[in-house]
Length: 334
Image (cartoon, rainbow, N blue to C red; front, side, top):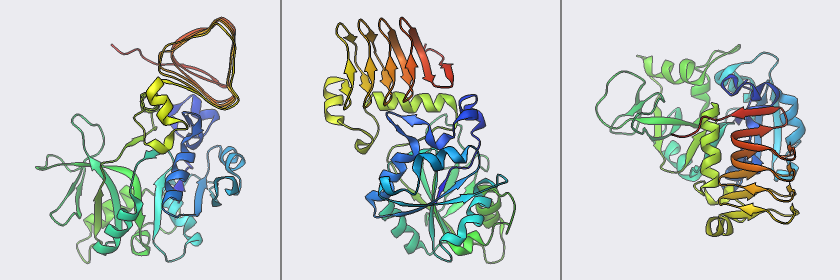
């Protein structure tokens, strides 16, 4: 199950018109990279919950056939939160364990090892974790010697802390802890409730991954992901023509139309069918989405242009995300 119903309020104003799961990274939406990850491990059936601008997600993804997946949708008239969304959608998998992933995640995660760790632990749920970096503002999680979750965000603790990376395997036992109807949170009403139980507490396993992970819940984090893409730091399967892009600092997608007298300063990534007019200065750190059109005599530096977005002749942009819904300024690095 991919959680994609949230409003993404911290990404406003862009999220007012567009759901987070469809925000582009490189030349594809975030959720497409999750599909690639799932297919690597043989997963062919996906449930996606919908609420905020859900019709756009359904229109973009359809029945999943073009992604070689079968997609079902769980539509929420009332926003049910992460826990309530899982409870409502459980009819799709019945009593089976289910992999649940946040729809705004970019992940490099070995799902086979995650599953094996979950089965070996005989836990009610297994949370995918990463070591908590210094100065991180994420809620710290601590494990005991058996890799079971001991605390979630509870003050000063000795030993390494971890951050939950929005991927988990949930059993029927865990889902039964959640309220049977209405809004609920997987962490508040599930994990923390399990840890508070004194009689027959549900075991929560922690699986530690060292692969790439970022999420795009805020605009600065979305910008960081886009910069990671341009620097070649994302997993290899995120790229088309990655070797060429890493070697040259320039990638030109299929069907691009480039006029003469353009100057490129790497890194520059042009998605399929992008158009660039003459006498443009492009880069460094420019990402032009699929089907976007850059007019002549533009000067673009530290810019992310969303797919299908026109950029007018003579535009001079720096530290901007340019979308069909407007432009968002990014604070320049000091």
